[in-house]
Amino acid sequence: MKRIILSLAFAAFTLSAVSQIVAAANGSNRKMGFVDANNRWVVQPIYATTSWDKEARFGFFKMDFDDKTYGLVNEQGKIIFPQGKYYMYYKREDDYIAVERLIEDENHQRDMLKMEASGFGLATRTGQLVIPAQYAMGSFRETHGQLVKVSIENEKSTTYFDRNLDGVWSLQENREIIPCKYNGIVFDPQYIAVRIWVNDGNSWGAFSYDGKEIIPCGLYAGIKWDADDIFSVYKNGKWGYYAHGKEVIPCIYDDAVAFTGDVAMVKQDGEVKMLKNPLKDATKIKVDVASLNKGKAGGPVFSRYPKPDSDVDKNIPVAKKQAETTFAFIVANENYPDAPVPYSLNDGRMFREYCQKTLGIPEKNINMYEDATFGSIIMAVEKMKSVSEAYDGEASIIFYYAGHGFPDDKQATAYLLPIDGDAASITSTGYSLAKLYQEIAALKLKSAIVFLDACFSGAKREDEMLTSARGVAIKVKEDKPQGNMLVFSAAQGDETAHQLEEKHHGLFTYCLLKELQASQGDADLGTLTDNVTKQVKRQSVVINNKRQTPTAIPSPSLQASWRTMKLK
Image 1 (cartoon, rainbow, N blue to C red):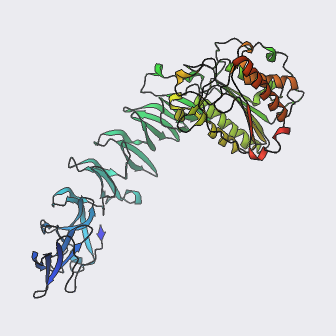
Image 2 (spheres, rainbow, N blue to C red):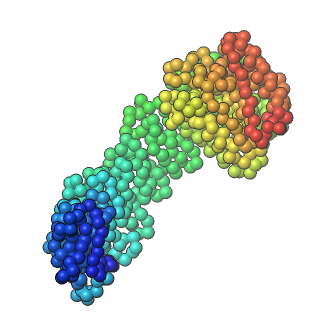
Image 3 (cartoon, rainbow, N blue to C red):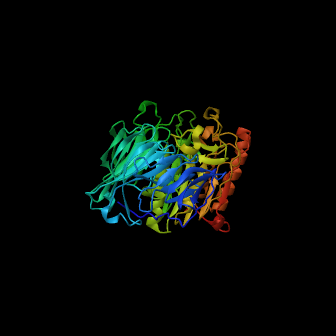
């Protein structure tokens, strides 16, 4: 391993004051040494060259001009190196000194610009070698606490990637905990990843910080630490999970993320699924895996409330023609573990009937998600993206949601609450309403109409949710829709979205269906929203003795035209 080191020869006198010591020259014998602040020799002038490094707080010297080794003097004037005259200062590494061990080269003995190093090591400021000078690296490139990455040169290698093989040395234990046989070492916050190259591809393994192998090298092309000692692992173009010495979930997924709240979201063949934490008691994880991602919510889902049998559930008008380029996405969340939403399934199911019959949306264009998990909502958004791409601006979307909304009380921002969500950790288990608007706004669509039979006043704790209403009292920020979008929500501010008990529906949905029934789906959006808002406001005051004010919010691009638009 070749190194080029510039000679530090001095004309006669070099002075660089640091602390109490400076390098100085003796005029009588032209030798150099070090003096203190009182100009007294602390290192006698017997050297050919001396200098002081202000940043490193060390002085360097050479015995004669032909010498290949540098000596080292600390701030107290104590000579630290050489120890056997084969060490030289290389560079400062925080509280340590990186040193080189030199070998004689008969061809270059007189050439001070060419010196060959056989190894690098690490020493303390007192001169103690903590890493033997046996590694072929010019610097200790990456450290993590008491761990140092070291490297040796592989003389048998013919490829670029195999020139240097890395390992890890523990300064605290004074031993090499990972041998130098890997082509890459990466310090992760929780573990050490090592990389070896196999033919033209790379393969990874993982070690703990005490040098124990966690995942053998050669099994996976990619590794990511997740949580609870679980790793996401990648091979043959697919992702899976590895824990406790084995592959606990096979590598069959197109994408995989870390476990959060004992579940992880994965994607397989374009569909989103939720997996339970394989290290936890599956019976205590509230995720209905059997119903996840069966295309349309895995329904039907059981409802504990009476079936729809009101006036809007009968005599549903039928459209004369099909709306082939309109797509409906309906999310109806009722069976939350601790705070069910009465009649949400009735709402979603009957809205679907009106979409198909009254608005003329083909059945194949209607996507129903009953008791939707976080993964199901993600799946709905992904399906919307696919529709947008396939129809290139000619498609219209109707998104309907009935269920709990919930606020992040710190930021006062609104979230849809999936059936497997946790109100106490809404920011990580809920689906942001702002994100929903952003996702839809980014799509190339003719129009997007969003109906929200939910309020977002929520509750600070899940057990504070009212069973007779769909939320309580925090006023959230109003997220503005963008793109070609209109949002029509059941309530505003800190109001509550109620149900209409005798009709077995949410009040907002009942009035919406009533207006679709009366107009046979042909009313313009201005008339529809005006009539629904008027009826909800009146009935809420009379029946619930509380205000509930539906709100229509158009995006800027629809500000002037939305009132004349129609659903079909």
